[in-house]
Image (tube, rainbow, N blue to C red; front, side, top):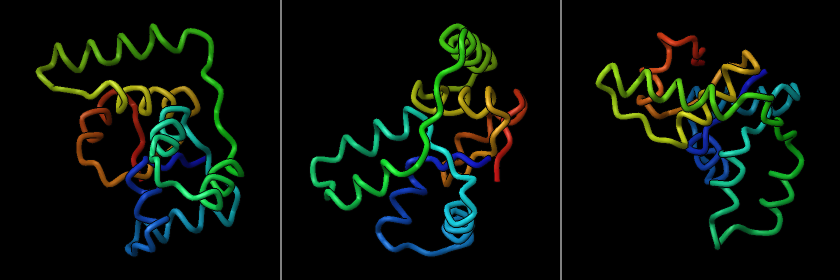
Length: 123
């Protein structure tokens, strides 16, 4: 299972290229791509989003938050803050979703590297 971060979706939707977009396309074709709730919320926040793009986004299964998600996410962010990092809340929620589902995160955001020591798998 692969979860694509918002920046990968944007690169794909804008016709971008690169190994990460290629991996995204393979995950999409192989139907192993899943949507983190925060990512769909971020993508749907674009007021210029076309109906076609919105339909395409709706075709990707959105993962449910598992019981205890919010305390786990809070504790994960707390550990990162304690270790001197500055994790964004949205990034922490995406990382926790990946951790809960043992999914690989496909992202261009180097900030997610700080989550690797807590179990996050990056593509």
